[in-house]
Image (cartoon, rainbow, N blue to C red):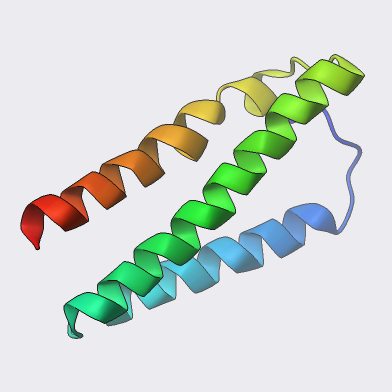
Length: 89
């Protein structure tokens, strides 16, 4: 439902998401600097993916539900994580 033909890209994104999740769990028992690194890595990945989704909408007119609905996660989650980090620090 993302509007892309089935390809290995989906597996690679799943692997990146798994890596971010594992690093997030490891961060629980580490310093603030480790948390910031985990937040920045995840946030950069999500924002760049969001830019890719917007590009896909503009260039290829791809308005599939999972190409558009994900934009919330791509931009709001990083903003929340960065805000929460500095509010907690």
